[in-house]
Image: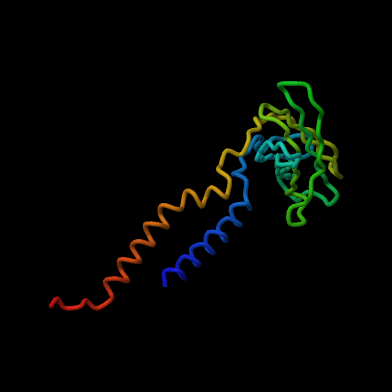
Length: 179
């Protein structure tokens, strides 16, 4: 019985570890409802830095017509460009992908190769014209522990739970009368 519970606990731990890889942190706004050209633009970001060359700097661009009526026309695309502000470095640009097929919501991932401030420029081009908006963000490493550390943190709780189950199972066994 205890072996089955152990196997079940390990399976639950592995299933949890897979879902931990799914998200790298909460995004936050760096621009909210700023009017540029014919667009009202909002930018949300999750500026994670990586050393392995993965583009972990994530940007969500939300577009609305500045007039407040109607929708963003098909063919409207945004591009995100970043450049380091604290040292010399290349400007990296990424075209956005549509989120759920909507021209109002677009996503781009850009490589941020070190911690520190980055200038962010979003360029929108479409039937309503061209617009640019600038901001800045501080890139940091994702400071959450590695998913494998989850096992280390959960071990004391799993061990206490296993001991508790063991005590409960012993109580269920009939006691032998003393002779």
